Length: 384
Ligand SMILES: Cc1cc2nc3c(=O)[nH]c(=O)nc-3n(C[C@H](O)[C@H](O)[C@H](O)COP(=O)(O)OP(=O)(O)OC[C@H]3O[C@@H](n4cnc5c(N)ncnc54)[C@H](O)[C@@H]3O)c2cc1C
Image (cartoon, rainbow, N blue to C red; front, side, top):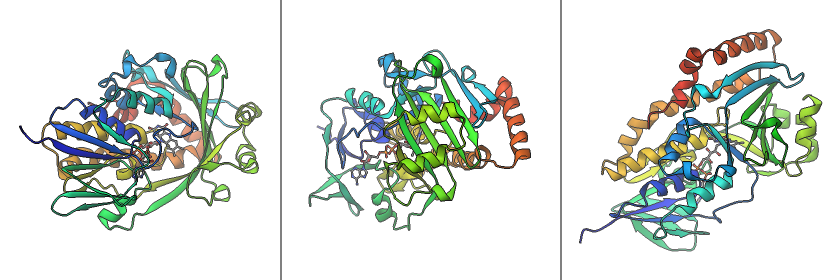
């Protein structure tokens, strides 16, 4: 009998579990997943999944997932944060196809969907931290508990703080701390926010609010690049009251009151990698471990899903190589990263004249299907 190809997936976030879903039915593969924590963490955030990722998730039956668990989005409305005057409205039906809509969901619900569909033969090891990968004759992975295992292919999906990348590439992994995010979930806010993403633009800050299910629970992410508000801590942590008060101080009272309803708001320092790294020999890096970027275009998870899908196709067709992955992915990722960085400037303008010019252009681009498709279609109309 032909020997099976062994694959280690390190990290059970969106990238790792999507990859497992695309590979688990392949009879010639033997897959193991290693996760340093428990798979689901406490629920602190929602996530927007754009059309480019939705069409990929549909290939693994996302369409059959109970619709109560997420909310399809039909428009993105952009407002001024102080007086709530409308700046622009992007009709997402320019990009939505039936059953392939842009949607928002609680992150844990997406993780549950990906997990529950996995073939029971896949071995999932939780609380099993990988500390190093070596690529000498074979790929060896070393665990914190002292064990070592060999695999034909290793895929590191260990997120933005990837220590595995740092050790394997021997690079001085440089993060850029570009901003700070405040995130939380507000329960049962009623229909007023249904089926749309609301984006509020302000001086050195913006806020996004969107529904994450059919109960009208809302997720919000406020972002500031005001360095006075910059968190000194490295990881997600519970926000201090005066931090939130400072962030919300000049928002319209309606917005302030809505956000203040949330009891647990978390502070997330926002980082991005300066370089993209896809791996070495038969060790691949995908998702945030390869190209973490700030969430100003809601593309981090979407690109992790794209990476997982593309790598699964290469593995299935026996064409996998880091060079090939780079050839297919690098240009797209670089293009999106550039836009994300530009968005931070565009969203946070403080000069009134520049704001007026921005608002005028946004209104024109969002209103006309042709212009909207030319501008946003490059991201959302991904051919999978
Ligand atoms: C404020 C904010 C808002 C965002 N909003 C959006 C959005 O709306 N839309 C969007 O598309 N993206 C968004 N993102 C980005 C998105 O969350 C990430 O891009 C996405 O989660 C990356 O998935 P991943 O699987 O690569 O990494 P992760 O989800 O970070 O998963 C990594 C996994 O690896 C595990 N792990 C780490 N190290 C090890 C180890 N050594 N051994 C074993 N396991 C390990 C971790 O425990 C974790 O489970 C947002 C990010 C932030 C910070």
